Length: 206
Image 1 (cartoon, rainbow, N blue to C red):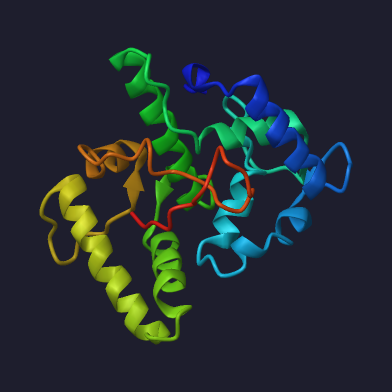
Image 2 (spheres, rainbow, N blue to C red; image 1 turned 90 degrees about the horizontal axis):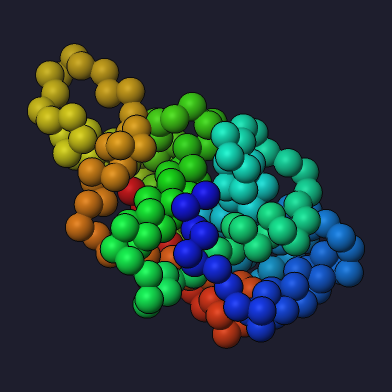
């Protein structure tokens, strides 16, 4: 998974396990409906993507495809590790491996149909949610902003495009290129677990 050097301590595992049991109402598995009860997620514009990330096989199985209906604590712990800041004592090579794994996690969150690209429609959906949920902008305005932003991303990823050229979407390699030089490792946090080891889930767009 690329996060072997980002392991949590026994104390943190105990905290996470207690929260898991609380969310699952002392059951051995956690379902989507359990996460939907978290109040801190109610107003988050990417609430759906955050919840789905916990049930996406790509995030806890090598070469995983599709999603599951419920997860155990091991899968829960694996997904939570993506939100932890890297340890200070790791090598640059290990740090880069963790960064790549975290960016893959973020990519998967936007690649909702698991086809290896973030399409204009997928990107537009996220932008619409971010912009229109507040009521400040209408859907059409949000769509226009999403289209313009996607073309800008395309120019960064593949260079200038002809007016009639079709942009298939952002691949993971393009995604890495777009975010090159942007510090992301310590900005992925979660607030909704109500614990000291994770405090904020950054709202983001590509």
